Image 1 (cartoon, rainbow, N blue to C red):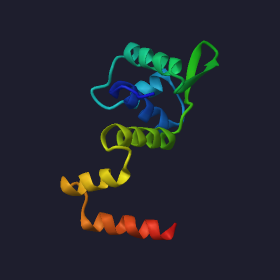
Image 2: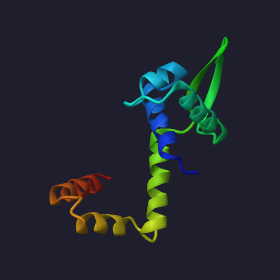
Image 3: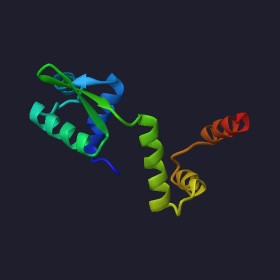
Length: 117
């Protein structure tokens, strides 16, 4: 399931923090920081989407990511490949080369990484 930009921003903060109370999440949001009610609503949506779990700490909630940033990144990139590049990561790399978004040095580094595996 895809996240909206606002949901993704909150998840980035939670991934960075590891977990957090509402005000910790708000305090770590990029400027201009949204109102705490906005962040609370987004967290509630993320709980409903099962991206975040809630731990009751007295009268307050501590939020924990249920999905890792790596797993979300992998799923997102796979979705982009399927949706826009016929499921081919080769087509993604070709697109990046054509758009001059990846350099020869970047490609050489990728080749080195592939040869190590």
